[in-house]
Image (cartoon, rainbow, N blue to C red; front, side, top):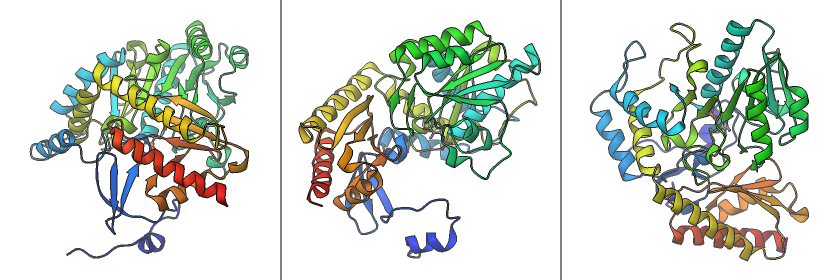
Length: 403
Ligand SMILES: *Cc1c(COP(=O)(O)O)cnc(C)c1O
């Protein structure tokens, strides 16, 4: 028997940069989770839009187990078969030319930004370094990515921050047009902002960003860490818009719960990073790549996307039924199975409280900003679990009506 552990141990031992909610989950299956007391939960969070194939998916378990018996790690002094196989599937699917594997979203974005800077400086000189970013955006927690992010609090007391990063209102085409110039190195954005409240870009905004980046020899970088790999009902969110970036980053859903990140780029951007310019010890780790390949094989099929879009529709219809008068939500935003529910006035800024009450009811939800509930269930969610989750959400919201 292993020793009993509790959240008190967390409070005693961990760096307190997290404040975990009370249940400790011990196992899961599909869109269901169970805690130490064997209590069942419906998971509408997927571990923050990560577990796209749910918990304990048999194909992912098999992929990990069989790779575990072959080879775990050799470093990037060598390549390995799972990494090569994953690249052969992922690179053509992205419409880009090359890939750099790493371990997280922040690391994928760090590589993207370094790539853009390196190309701009080596090709055009020291003054082409400005990176244009957007309010409410989230790109990770390294110093470079937190500086690119749109949340002031995440940067406070960590300075000096990397220079030449400016922020503009998202979806403001005019502001972007005015900002771009010969000094611009990159335009860096999420095609659908996730953490910032689930805000999709407008078609016009992305088209304009594409044109401006091309005109000024700047990189258009799409952060698809949250939106990539089927989450929005297409393989990548960019597919909704038909707009191709120069660099695209992935992580979260790519490993279905096993840590992996990827930076994909066109040839001119990729080739700037020659041997010795960038790297990471675990990037392209065989275990991670074997799992990610299994994820892609499962997801990258028209029938799979059709199913995601069907569940998305059912979810939206269910939400409309729960809230016919917009008592709870003023707006439901997003695409596929990434939905943001903007809270109405009586519930304003109660997102975290709602998450807590939902958890007491047996439903795992997410917030996105202080005033938006975020739903990101596993893409393989069954209709039964979807309806159960909606029922628990309704019960949760009714609790707030009484109080
Ligand atoms: C989660 C997220 C990141 C950061 O990913 P980590 O794996 O936590 O470093 C970056 N960009 C977006 C859009 C994200 O949602």
